[in-house]
Length: 122
Picture 1 (cartoon, helix red, strand yellow):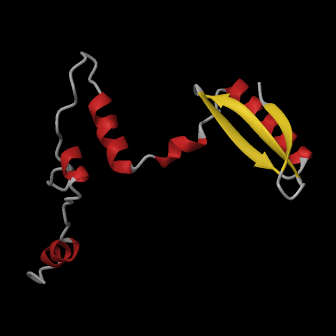
Picture 2 (spheres, rainbow, N blue to C red; picture 1 turned 60 degrees about the horizontal axis):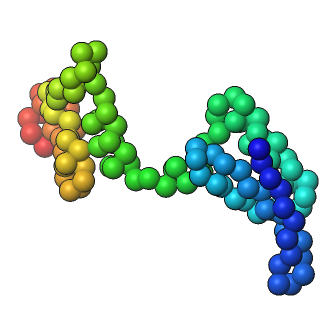
Picture 3 (cartoon, rainbow, N blue to C red; picture 1 turned 90 degrees about the vertical axis):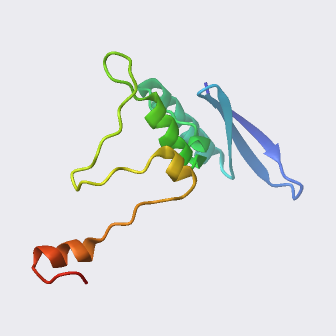
């Protein structure tokens, strides 16, 4: 259940803090108006009922660590980890280790197109 509390700033203005527990963490947002705080609390409660409440800090994770964890967690039906797979273009996908080291494959798009058109190498 979301909780709305009124507090005063050093300047004497009213602020309304909304505290709600999402995914085992307490999330707090502050509003100037009570109506905005109540609307946010109702929105979060409706999202929780639908199962769509998400911790706003969850988006702070970088892509490379998330991708590495995601690849490590993927399993085949028998419980075995996924095998590396070549892409349709014939190249291999970069491994999570290469993502961490920021080593990426470069793609020679123009050279491949030139060879297809019979222009040789660019």
